[in-house]
Amino acid sequence: MSVLPENGDGQRSVATAVAAFLDETELTKKSKTLAAYTTALSYFTESCTKISLKDIERTDLLKFCAFLRDKKNQAPRTVYNKFENVMTFLKVNGIRGLAGKNDSPRYTEEEPEMNERTELDKLFKACDAEEQLWYEFFLMTRNARAGSDIYVSVGCEFRGLNCSRSATSSIVDGRRRLTRNVRFRFLRSS
Image (cartoon, rainbow, N blue to C red; front, side):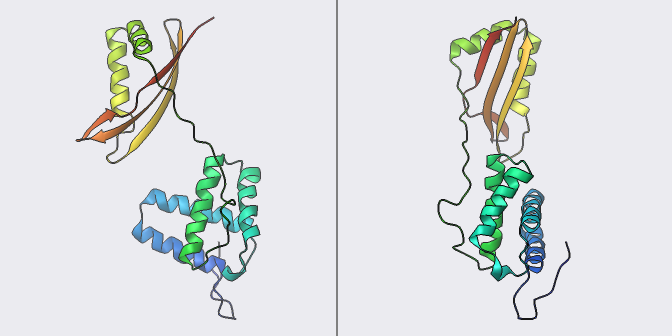
């Protein structure tokens, strides 16, 4: 992306504003946040051909969402995240009120299913001691990072059972703790 200076009429160009925003983000945010903003703004400038920041309209935001969905094949949650990143960029640059309350992309976040104790007992009964130890180790250490909650979903087949499980855990007192019940689905293999 080439960075254009202020337009001759004193209006800030989109490219200049994006570069300045990303420079500031690099100084104040974590690298993953910078990467998310960089990607979102790169896609936005790819979908929006406006030169001046003041020329951006509501339709540009709607076209951006359609671009992410149709051209970049992004999932609904990803479209929402990138839309919010662009809205943050616009807000920092003093542009508010472009999107109406119904313009924000929608997505459905599915709640993981929970297991009954009898289903867990069934799983652990099918495990030998080593399998159970590895399974518990996996649950307690998967993506361990202080200050984070994680959601894990795993599918496997062993001992004639097809199993899938999901769980959420957090770091508590320096150790990973399961914070949400675990759900397993059992299907007999054919």
